[in-house]
Length: 227
Image (cartoon, rainbow, N blue to C red; front, top):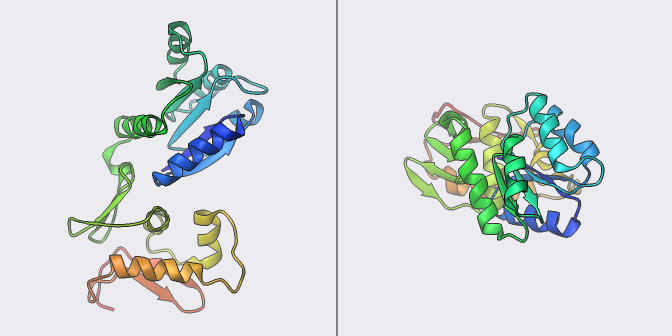
C-alpha cells in the first residue's frame, strides 16, 4: 500500500514515515502545499496523511481542491488545533478522519488500516499468485493457508513481485521501486533478498513461484508448474 505524507515539519514527517514503513507501507513525503495538489491529482496513492498548517496552500485548501478534482483517495487530516470546529470543517470538506497533535503512531497506523478496509473493495486488498495470498492491509502473506513470517523489506519486495506477476523484473527496476535508489553495481543485495524469499515461499520443490532469468532478473509466476 502506497501512502503519501504531506507535512512540513521534517521531524514529524520522518516520525510518521518511519512508523508506517515499519508497518510495511510504502511511504512518500512532500513538505509544501503548493506542490501537494499536483502530486495527489497526478499520482495514485492508497491513503494520504495531510497536515492542516503548511507553507503555500493549507490542508483545507488542498483537501477541497483534490476532492473537486475527483480524487477519492482516503485522507486523514492532522492538526495541532483539535477542536470541534476544525474537525467538522475538515470532515465537511471530505476528510475521512481527523487526528490532533500530538498523536500515537500506533493509533495513526491503525486508523489508516481501518480506512483502507472500509474504502477498498476486497479484491484490491487481497493479491494472489498461484496459491500465494497477500493481504495488503494487514501486510501478511499466506501459502496454502499458512502464514509466512517475513521482514518488512521482504514483504515489500514480495508485494512488488506479486503486483507485477509474470513480468521479468531487472535488478535496477527492483532497486528503484523497492529501495528507491540504486546500489553499487557489485552489490548482491537483491540476490540475497530473493534467496531469502525463495527459502520461505518456494518450500515446495515441485511448485516454485520464483524464477531466475539468467542475465536479466527475476519474475514470480502465477501458474504453478514443475521446474
